[in-house]
Length: 299
Ligand SMILES: [Zn+2]
Image 1 (cartoon, rainbow, N blue to C red):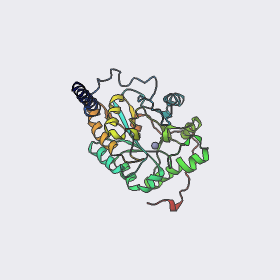
Image 2 (cartoon, helix red, strand yellow):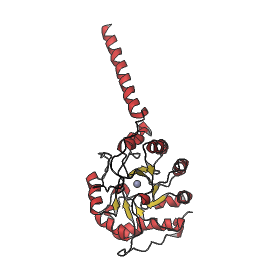
Image 3 (tube, rainbow, N blue to C red):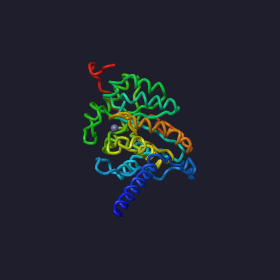
Image 4 (cartoon, rainbow, N blue to C red):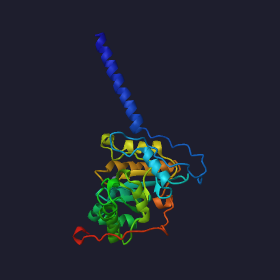
């Protein structure tokens, strides 16, 4: 009977160890971080992504983000320029059926966020676009239907993706955004410059809690929450999604993260409050907005 006792002891130990590890990662809420000692208006020497690179997901290498931010100062951003305790929450790929619930949570916490939306989805959910604008959120352009744009020529890029989406904004809201985010964060250098001439700044991110990562969805909203808690920093730009699939976990994580971040001394800002986004003057050579086919506009 000696070996049976050993097996039972081992199994019991393993179950307890797993339960403890699980509780530590998913149940235990970390304490607020110690406040940064850097004076808040000190400029940052570099911009970079804080969350680790994820292999096997065709992600842009983090060094490439940093290189582009360095090459296009003031035009391509990964984070705010100084050390104010501000955070920009950003949500991509909507609007979708998830968006109203996210807007409810943001309204309840009195937080303004920034949305990078797809022209195609805006046509399907124009009421969500109007509501987000009315409630003081900042809206940006995330292309028409989320391709990898880095290989597109100028005409296709504008006429079928970014310009088309600007035209939908114009149609629904009467105004056009001055921010864009390329799908997957993938954009060629000449396209960054082209966006500048269209009056569009390119906004990437510094914290990616991977709410898009299906391999992590089994763990619910907790991993999204913990990644933001582990990697948050002054003037962070946090990447999340209100489109591309069910986003209950994102909405739940945001609901719990806002009070945690406020307890840590952070407040929330839209991208234009975080960085200087005054309209361009002088050398801009914008292309005219494409004309939207009437039958493609549903509402
Ligand atoms: Zn996207």
